[in-house]
Length: 294
Length: 294
Image (cartoon, rainbow over all chains, first blue to last red; front, side):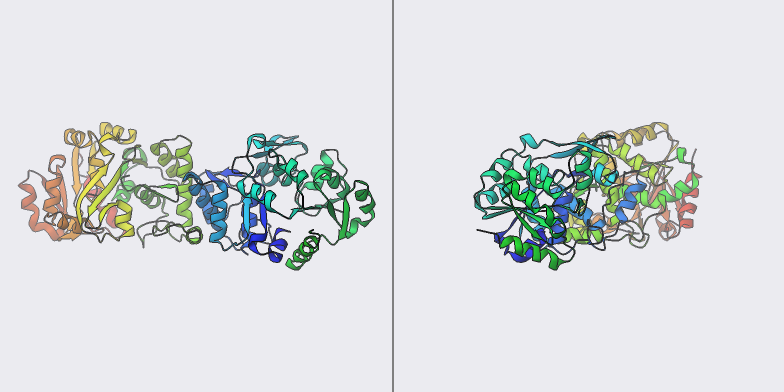
């Protein structure tokens, strides 16, 4: 979705705010999986088969780390490791995560503004039937198999929204909540002090895209988690969660029968094809959304 | 030389003490070039063509670091980077460099004891006609080209010899100074508080091997530096520097004519083949030296 928007808008007309609740320290290095996926996607380096990492990356260093007895369940390619090494060094030099993110993206030729949700650490923790699991341990280490009882955002209540997010809310004409996981990707951002309230008060058009299509999430464990949390796995339920921050809710053609339920919540449904496989799909959806701007 | 000794002695009969004056921070990672060369050599991983790094290593991460604008004049392969990542992590966990060195070596199957000269930071600085240069900047970055006026060991006067070196001096039956660079490799060790004095008082046989053969160093810039410091580039000059800590001085067959000058210093010369190319050469010299033990 973000790639589609980036293809439609000049760099200074788009700010992409990215979840950092997934951030984790591996081998002493600061890894920001969502920021990296965004950077690799926008720079054309991303591995589209796996959905993470750099296309054609090798895993030579990781194999050596395994020889040294390091835990290597989190796959880190050699090119990807360079990103984490550089980020960690720049952070330890005293730069903020926003500054580092901007520098890394520029180095790889990304012209659009990619900003972390906060420069302060926030950690998404899942309370599961296997105990408390940080996001990456749950998602990668345990392949999202444990049953989720609750999701918490450690540190979110004292974290400050990043300057880039702050400026974007003040200056933007439109707000788009991408079809990301409501609990693991958008939840941490909305949990930051004041963000949800400022989204509520945001004067421009607010558009949310449903990550749930036809009774399950298009990718990732959002559907499974909704079910485990006792919620109905439906785009309607997602719309209900975003009710206070949503003018237009985009649902897939498969869910057209649910449009009236969206309307009942005083939200305008937009029924269209939301399954994005090719870059053309992403651009097409982005165009439809941008056409909604006031 | 150390490899030859390791091939001749069971693990508990040999302690190899390694210079850490070359240690440097690259990309925020703690790099110990001499410790690593020793570890890779003893584990059979070393790149024998280059004399540094791991054989067959790739440089994928370094290429990516260059894209991020990092200085990459110091070649770090992907496998090698894993060593530095792991070391840095273990050090930041609070382990000493001795503990980390031991752990890394064990992980790669090195049974012999490899110890850093100190767990405290010591930095070899060369005062040159291009200004002050830390060892790696001089040796790798500037290919040992600047003219050396003086060599200093920053921090050596307050550093404590590592426990492994301490125990070795107390327990060993023989002391061997390998044919390393007197200023850049052995100098930092001898500059540690009390080490030279304890070598002087060491009761067992003390054997030094000349790094200078036929008017130049066999490898590295030792000969060039001697000349720049106004010294005679000769094994005799090296013997003079080690005069107080040397019972037997090993010189090459090419320098047999200089044996009387060694004897005049009350040092026993041992004239033999000291040019080590093959592992057999190293083992042969090690055997000759070990035969000198009391």
